[in-house]
Length: 569
Image (cartoon, rainbow, N blue to C red; front, side, top):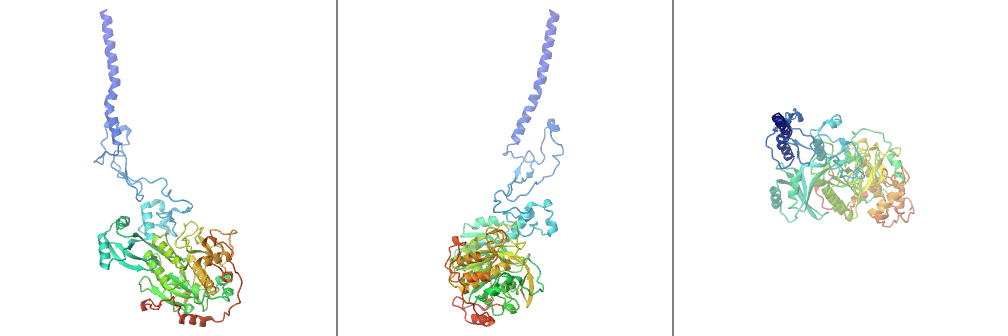
């Protein structure tokens, strides 16, 4: 019995030892498991950059993690930092769909190097803020997304500048004080009769981000926005001497149209770069001039070419050789060619509307701009026809402005084979097309150029519209649009399309159809205009003499108190 009792006690002790050994790991590791769950709580504030790791769990952790430096996975703009794990490393996480908020129908697919921060597809690679060339842009996978986004913003707006509508009752001193309170400097401000508002241009001087200043400034002004950039829509080819053959003249049927009208007594404002009013092709055609930049730059190749596409009348032939021009310089030298801004373009629109323009040619493009949209709406309300270049950003670009505004006739470009100009923008906003590739035009200093771009397509259409208005001054902008699209020669797929709109402009057919055409509502643009009878042909021989007569007797709508500073140079 004694022997059996000893054996029982021995077995009992062994069982207790086994049970203790089984429970011991649970007792040791339970606090550690609880601590890990706490460290996942975002409210935990850990001061040290080096985590304190329980040595008992070392085999579960990669020993190289503690020695790694702080790593930024990505730097997506406006994404708040996410603090992950027990380390105090700041990790920025890229959203799975960074542009999901943009509809693919509005922002077509485009190469990543060309995509801007708001979905725009630019006509050149968006590079890092430090600059670079096309070769460096191809290394996009190695660059910083943040740098690309910032560079795109720089393309769209002038750095550190804001445009705001301020109280017109403020004195200059009060406007300056308002600016100082917000860390701004007032560069300029003026009353715009076109808008019935006072608009000011301001510069941020205290180094704060533009978005921050804009939000704060909005509390004390009626509206505020970035001062957006606009670029002329030529193909940026150098001006060269060229062949005098103008395929555009025959393609638009200008000689036939000029037997009916030549644009006499119709005023076209050209908001562009400087125009060489002394060029023989433009002699006696520039009736007024305004420098919205207040610059001292001389004539520019683009502005001179645009003027020539409309009124050339020496060796070359413009679409409306007897039209009057208001040459408005709104584009000056910039780092990427001639450029302008929201504030300056608004000054140009205001001047054109206040000085008798019946047509405004806008051969430039940029982003959708609330201030310019407002100016265009006010211009349209005055019954002024506006024509704009579709843009040269190509097939993958979203609609560019002002062409995409429904109050504006958007013009795409064609070539000598009546095919679409390769760089031309597309879209359902395109109304009509016109020649824009390898166009022979005047250049400053009595020279000539061969150049390309939807800029010149728009200029030709502006001239055709002037022929129509001479032939029938009662036409309204919607009438002109309807007749242009109805009489266009269909190109591409049958019917209206996103490349050519209604087709290529036919000046002779449009002027013929302009006879006694009634006002056409915008909703009925595709309808057939009435009264399409052809009048007796006018004598086309009264060439330069009629230009001189038209300019010697300005119409009442032209300003009589023009400043000498604004006289064409």
